[in-house]
Image 1 (cartoon, one colour):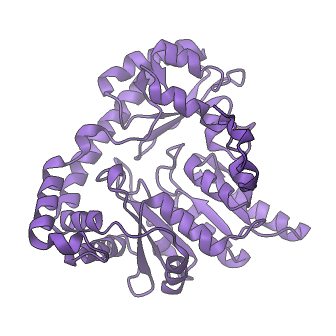
Image 2 (tube, rainbow, N blue to C red):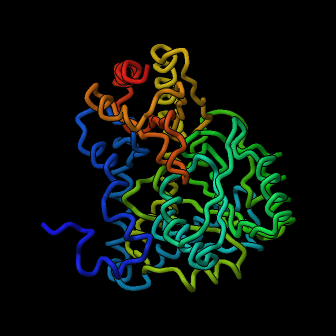
Image 3 (cartoon, rainbow, N blue to C red):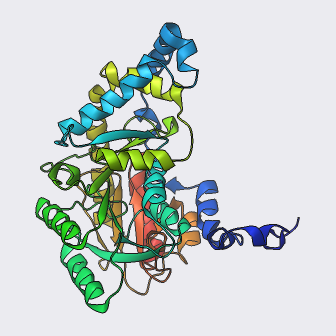
Length: 401
């Protein structure tokens, strides 16, 4: 087979695409996907969380009542109901329905990509948390931007560090970030949550330095304890926040439905440039699912189940991990972030961990800087059988000690 780097049209690819030809960025994913081990790597919902009975009911209702419309371009009434359901959820979070508009997308990453199409040009600056979700880093890299990484502490994004960087850039005559991307609730990968005080100061900085904020709320519905903090979009009086959410964690990733909420002119500009057509049938099914109250009814048992999983994982970490290890204690979401002795390289130890019967994601995957995060790893408690957590963490401890 011809080497991909030698393919006759490979030189026609963009510089960003050419960097993927050697496949080095996917090595860990391939190993993890095929590993015969307890999977603490991927942030997948556990299979029994999918309400197959309610989804089947919604499918059958849509097909029986408006099947031909639902399967056509544009869809029918149930597809329209989905936008209303999303709007109602935003309003319930305190987001002003008179000042914002909804855009349905084919998942949250599609929403982030659509924002980038409307805002970014090669050479622009995007500020992100350090570490942050690797999928969003990939999207930003595709647009040829400079990525400015900002530290995360126990209270989420370090807004003091952001202020220092912004002032330093202004003093040096360097460009100010056009977008700041933040996961405000139960951040992926650290599980931390940005405080209300931090959110308010972030918005003040956005006004002072004139940048937009992409708020990723993928895990907001999955709070297990502690007080709810209003979204940035609910605290925003200037229309600078674009809030992104999806049904991946609360209904199922396979429905591939997300949305964004933004000021109407911004929503319209993003919509005009967004790629990809609407999956009208899926929108119809989930429109019925939400309208029938199935989503709201599913959330309390989901939160209870994930809280129990988190507690099992934290207990196992406490029992087995070396004294030099530290980890986060999230109030929600799917993830625990573990930091190990500086001598430990979690990329190098991954094969040993797989052989020992457990998988994780190396910390380096969550940084724009390829040399960062080598002594950290992310564990997900969302997918694997919690009865396997204790043995899995015991095996991990032998590998990283």
